[in-house]
Image 1: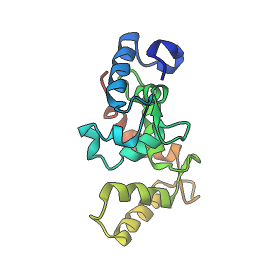
Image 2 (image 1 turned 180 degrees about the horizontal axis):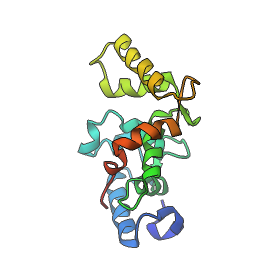
Image 3 (image 1 turned 30 degrees about the vertical axis):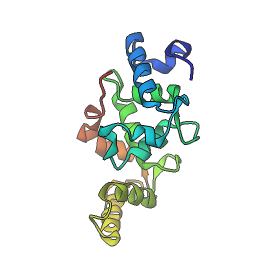
Image 4 (image 1 turned 180 degrees about the vertical axis):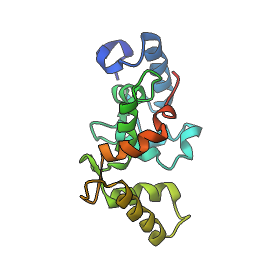
Length: 170
């Protein structure tokens, strides 16, 4: 796994040395099998994440190498997006990436449906959810290409000040 001192400082730009040490301790506590990376089950050992329907998407976004687990570097980089010193655009890009499942820079109708389905589970019938998705795409899609770009997403979500809610204290 390496330790917090072995990572380049640019990786940890939003955290100071003491915060990196605290993150390292937290990571080691979560790494129940001492494998040097966190699995979905290890993330789910956190009570605050256990009930979060988007935990798998958060892990997918943190997991930049796509191996299905989050190593310490990915953990620090992912968590740094929530730093109080993180900027608004970085937080909005994180929120956008939750919906951009195929990482092509756009939120498609299908991706929006899948993520919203994770959130509402079976509280809406699929046809009701699809109506919401279609209407959302129509409203947000300013260039008429049938999908939502980061700029289109930011124009609406940025006004909701979501970035102020995406903050963690380390």
